Image 1: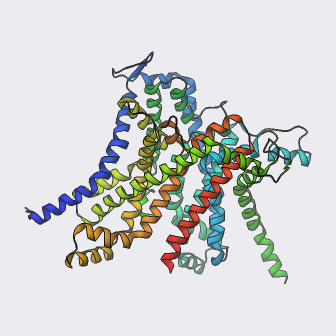
Image 2: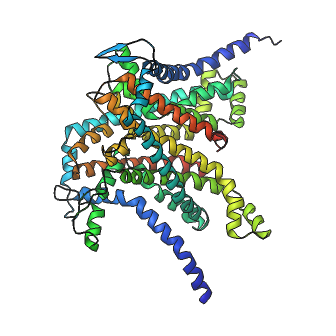
Image 3: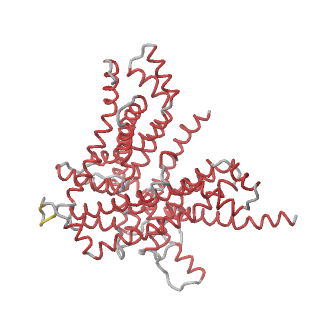
Length: 288
Length: 265
C-alpha cells in the first residue's frame, strides 16, 4: 500500500491540470462527435424532421440499395489498385535513391521527388485534369504523334482517379520506404553477399523482409487516406462511378439525410478498422 | 573500356526508370505552372504566353483574397492552439507517472487514424445539433482536432531524459514550475515546437473537407478554389494554384532552414 505525501498529491494534480485541456478538446470535438454520429446512424429522417427511435434501418437500406453497396466495392477496388501500384512504383525509386544515387545528392533528389507533394490538395487533382482532359497535354501529344485524329479525353473515369491517387502516394511511399532503407545497416547485405547470396537472393531474403514493416506502414497510410478521400474521385473520376466518400457527400448535399450519411461513414470506419486489425501485427507505428 | 560500357548499359534501365517517374511526378505541376502564364482563356496547348494577366485577375479578385486571408488566420491560430495543447499534454505525460498513461496517449493520438471526412461529418452533425453556426471558428476547431495529435506525438518523442535532468536542476535551484516550463523546457524544445507548428500550418493551409463542411459564408482558400473549379479549366485557377504552391514551398524552406540547419550547426 502506497501512501501519497501532500507533495506527490499536488504534483499529480498539476500533471492532470496540464493534460486536461488536450483531453477535453479531444473528448469534445473528436470523441463526442463520433458518438453522436453513431447515434444518428441508428435514427432516421422523416421529411425534414429527425426521428430518434433506434433501428438498423439505415444499414439495411445500405445493403438493399445496389448503388450504395457498389460505391463501397468501387472504393475498395480503387484503393487496393492504388496501394499496390504505388508500392510497386515507389519501392524501386526509393531503392535507387538510397543505393545508387551518390550520398551528397540524395537529399536533393529526395526533396525533388516529393516537391509536388506541396501543391494544394484540390489543385493537384485539377492539374491532372489539365493533363488528361479533352484537348489537354496528353491528348495533344497523341495528336502530334498522329496516334489519334480527334482530341481524346482520359478524364472522368476510374483510370483518371487512380492516376491522381497514385501520383500522390508514390511520393508519400518513396519518402517512407527511403527512410526505412536508410535505417538498415549495410552490413546485413554485405554479410549476405559474403555468404554467397546473389543480389536477387539478398533482396528477397534480407532487404525485403527487413523493409516490410516500413512498407506496411506506408501501405496502410495509403489505404486509409485513399479510401476516405472525396476530392480526387470527385474531380477526376466524374459522376459515372461513385466511390463511398462521394456517396456520403451526396446524402448530405442533395438529400440532407444525415442519418444515412452517418451510417455510411460508420461503414467506412468499420472497413478501415478491419484493415487495421488485419495488418496490426506489421504496424508497430511507434517503432517506425 | 568495354567493361565500363557494359556497366553503363546495364545501369540504363535504372536511370530511365528514374527519369520516367520524375517525369510522372512533375508533369501535372509543370503543366499547372506553365499554363498559369497562358495568354488566352484556356489552359491547354498551344501555349501562347507568357502573360501575367491571370495573376492580375487573381490579385484583383476580392473573394479569393478574402479566402487567402481567412486561410492564413485559421492556419496560424489553430496551429498555435494545437502546439500549446499538445505541448502541455506531452510535458505532463513525459514528466509525470500517471495511471493509464498508455491509454491516455492512445486517446490523444486516436484522431490520426480516422479519415478527415469522418471527423468533418461528426463535427458538422454535432454543430448542427447544438445550433452552433458554421464559421471560420468551427473550421479552426476542426483543424486543432487533426493537428493536436500530430503536435503531441512530435513533442512527446522529443522529451528525453537529459532534458528532464536539466529541468530537475532548475527546480533544485529554486525555479517555480512555470519558470521551468517557460525558461528551460520551451527553449530546449524550440526546434520541435517550431517544426510541429509549421507542420500544423501546412496541414491546416491545405485542408479541404473539414473546411468545406463546417464553413458557410467565409471560406478558406481550398474551398474557394474548389468553387472556382465549377467553371471548368481556367488559367486563373492555374495562377492561384501556382501561387499557393509557391507559398507552401516557401514555408517548407523556412522550416528546413530554421529547424534542420540550426540543429546541425
